[in-house]
Structures are given as structure tokens and as C-alpha cells.
Length: 242
Image 1 (tube, rainbow, N blue to C red):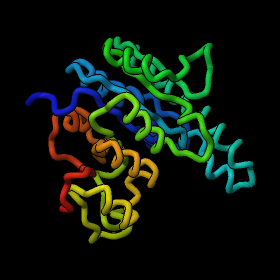
Image 2 (cartoon, rainbow, N blue to C red):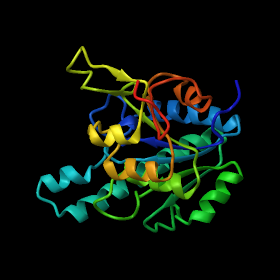
Image 3 (tube, helix red, strand yellow):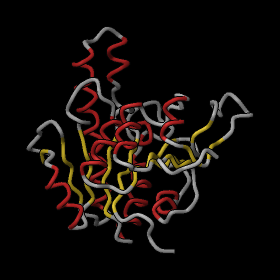
Image 4 (cartoon, rainbow, N blue to C red):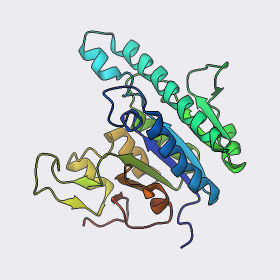
């Protein structure tokens, strides 16, 4: 089976990196994710990544605890850079050239985000990891993923999560929850299905970028998604609700 997608944006939550730990980073999980990414890069897939920081610090929780929201969000952005550098190290140990580009300048450890530079890295076969979110407080890394996907002309956003798709109810509490195979952007927005935040969904809708939601914990799922196999849930403009 050939590649369905040539240039992809992979959205990883910070929580995905901590495995079964209460917080922080599980090196074994990071190595496993890096190997899956290594496999698709070897197939010739141009791969960009946006990683969250919730395993270290989440701005919304900081604000809820009394911190200034903008300050809390900036701390969360710095946490995403820590995760990006960790993932970069794991990829480069696999021999995959990787660049971390940050929306907040940190010249000693990463390159500043410049759209054309990011695209050039991808064209040269380097994995690009976007750190520090969009550089603005009050915006999520989901929104950053949609924004960067549009900027680099990615063909798809892969949202790798802890569940195997989008459900009409919480499958952890409702045994009768039904998983959707496909959804329209409009249905996701009107039904508040929380695939990604509304700004991210709107950005993908406006730029006709499909979103595929799948379970990261299943080995080989990233490659299956790249190959166009029917895993998880696909959200798109031409999708029917099923």
C-alpha cells in the first residue's frame, strides 16, 4: 500500500509522553513514539509535530489555582519546549535529523519559528517539532497544530490520543458510547464533541485540512494513518456522519 499523505502534522499531547506516570516524561514511551515517527520518515513522509505540555504544566490549571492566566500560559509554553527537546533527542538517537522551532525565541536550544525555514527543513527530510505553542497566551496547542498545519501546507492533522476515536459520549463512563468513523467539521462544532477546540476545528475547516483522531498506544497506528487505513475517526468537509 502506498502513502496516502506526503506531508503530515502530528499533534501529541504532553500527557502522551508520561505513559503511566503521574507527571513528567517516561523515556520508554518517548522512545516508542520516536520509533513510530522514524518508521514513517523512512517511508518518505514529511513530518511536523506539535507537542503539548500538560505532563509538566497546564496553564488553565495554573490560572484556576490563582495565577495570572497569561503568565500561566507562558509557563505552559516553556513546558512544551522541554517535551519537544526530549522528543528531538530520541529521534536523533534513531538517526533522524530533527529541528525544534519555537514561537518564543530560545536561541541556545532551538531555532525561532520561521514558516519558510520550517518548510525547507521538511523538504530536506528533517522532522520539525514546533515548541512554545503559537507564542500567544489564551491559545491551545490544538489551535497551534491547526495553524501550523495550514502554514506548512500539511495534508492532514493526526491527533494522537488515549482513545481510539471520537465518541458520542465518554466511553470510559458510558459502555453504550458509539464511536464515529467519520464526521463533518460542522457536526463536531454544533455537537461540541471536543475533538479539538473550536478555533482549531474552524481553522482546519477553513483550510480544508482533515483531522484523524486515533489511539497512539496501539503500535503501528501512526504508520497506518499515513497509509490511509481506516483507523479512529476522520473529520473533514466531505465526510459523512457514520
